Amino acid sequence: MRWLTEAPVLEPIGFIQPCLPTNSREVPSRSQWAYEIKHDGFRFSCRRDGDRVRVFSRRGNDYTDRVPLIAEALAALRVKSVTIDGEGVVCRADAVADFDRLRAAVGRLGSRDAFLYAFDLLEINGDDLRRYEWQVRRATLKSLLRKARDGIRLSEHLDADDGDAVYRQACAMGLEGIVAKRRDSRYRSGRCADWIKVKNPDAPAAIRVIEG
Image (cartoon, rainbow, N blue to C red):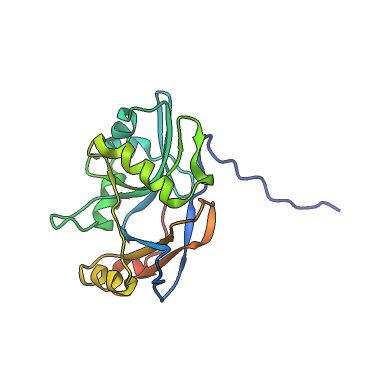
């Protein structure tokens, strides 16, 4: 009898499986939560190791050549190595991310319209930060990006007692929704209950099939 086994999935060197938020219809509203805007784009894991720069999609596909602005900003950071988690976007004139424009941009090699909204820092100069709390990683990321080029921008978060108010405002602006994150959470690959995503039901992303 021949046993059928699945071939192992080979991930590219330097790629870290992303932390994925748990979907919910309710916004957690307690002091241990921080709130980030969910931008409508492609999830990117950006890796710099010496002079080598790579931008991976959520599934580990290499998008580096398609997003030169992000790659150049990553190469210009004053570090020996770094791994940044974020959302690749193309924004309209009103600063709202437009998924269709992003998809068209990355479909043409060499587009300089896409940039990264960075929201987490997994490693820097050989130090694995995933074991540290979100608020520690966040402060380090903010410091790192203080003089970054336009290809990488900090995805701002909000400190608020009323998470529902933050969510309602995001929906009113036509945004994809919000992601609530526990301040004391470590970074874990795969689905995680410490990150809660609440979608705007009227946003195009609510019905879109995941890409990348």
